[in-house]
Every structure is written in structure tokens, then in C-alpha cells.
Image (cartoon, rainbow, N blue to C red; front, side):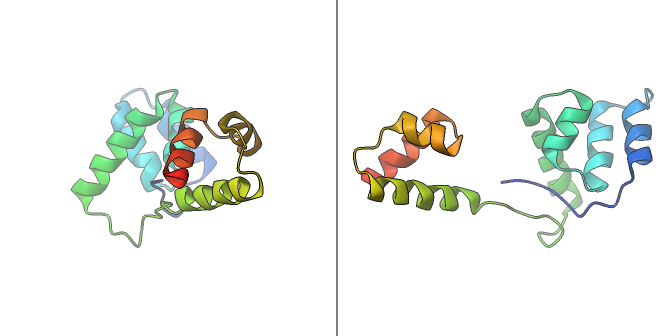
Length: 120
């Protein structure tokens, strides 16, 4: 699930938030998220791990009760990938996990898991 809100922040505001030494990283993460940056962008800007940002933002959303209409949830990407893999298997039933992984640019273990689900 990808957490994002509509972008409403300017580059100068982003620079101001990131360079402010008097605030915590968690505060910066919440401010950047409220400004419309997604978790990956925030993690890159603050040079911290994606999971750290995701946890802070998830907690923030729960605490603020940010409505689902404000948050874009991209949970259908997995089903799109699954159908793509199903099509590849349909075209070539003997295709290897490594080939699918390379073709789609996805993690080998993730592709293996999906292929295992598909083949049963």
C-alpha cells in the first residue's frame, strides 16, 4: 500500500523543512507528507530508510484519522502484476522465475511467490 496525499508544497518549503535543524526527523516526515510528498520521496530527501518513514506516516494517519479519500491507496498493483505473470505463464508454461523477474524488473523472491500461487 502506498500512502500519498495531493501535492500542495513548493520546492522552497521542502528545502526549508529538510534544512531545519531544530526539528526532529519524524516532524519533518509528517510535514512533508502533509505537503503531498510520498513515502519514497521523503525517505530519499531525509536519507532514512523507507520503512522508518512508512511507520511514522502510518501512525500519523491513524492519529489524525486522515480519511481514505485524502489518501491514495495503490493496492491493486499486486493484482496487475499477478495477471501479467499469468499471461507470461500462459504464453510459455515452462518459463523460469528468473526470466520473469528480469522481464518485469521485479524481485526474484516476489515473482517466485506469485508464480507459486498461480501454479498452485
